[in-house]
Length: 338
Image (cartoon, rainbow, N blue to C red; front, side, top):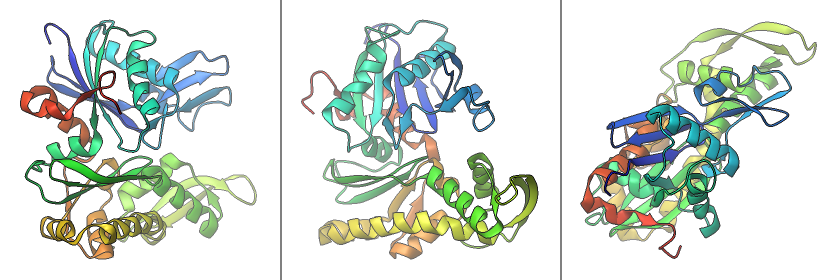
């Protein structure tokens, strides 16, 4: 690849993870952008996230990704260009970029990954795509070509990808519109219904990580500030772990039901291998305490929780970038008929 710089990029909905081969380092930053009404960019990345749910009405803060897919190509291009420039202090021309993409994407949606690095501020970049379950499997140490049956469940910020791999390929995969954001919204909904208090999703996320425990070991209470649903005035309220955990059971049960459906439709010889190996659980939203135990009990299968969390996919890309034997799992968007 000559003197080209090489990157592995996981454009997650909440955070973007970039591996730089030249620096041998993984960069993690919020995948968010803040714009004024006149479309002028105010902030990108972590700086934009600091404005989320705090910015005035004339500033809009959001992610260019939705449910694990690119929702706004110009915004995603600007975010990626800005972060790469911040990392390398260069214009990032003529690089080799490996993108991890969900299995469910159409040919047009996959080509959007080429557009964001060759259609605007960046150009002359060579693009390869890697299916996310493959990158996860490599990071988790699953021997792809020897595996006779492995299940990977990646719970992200806004979506969950459930995949079954066997004989060196993904035999079935499905993206669910359930992730950390839906868990946060479930907490907001239950707090509003039970306590008549409106809280933001950032507050809900903090409560989830600090108080949430799907094994019920944490019995805590925290004071939070919100808006009274009846009076519209600020109010302080005490929220217990019980409220948080009950809210979280709803989206997690939906994920568990889909896993059950997958296993019921899986050929017996493959499901037997999954039973022996256990279900591999990863993704940024698996930092919730006790999530693996909850799902293991729900689906009646062993669940192995990875300690890579949101870095699992980009770690797989790192392995592919640095190992020529693994680069057979990466495909050129322009050359491969998707």
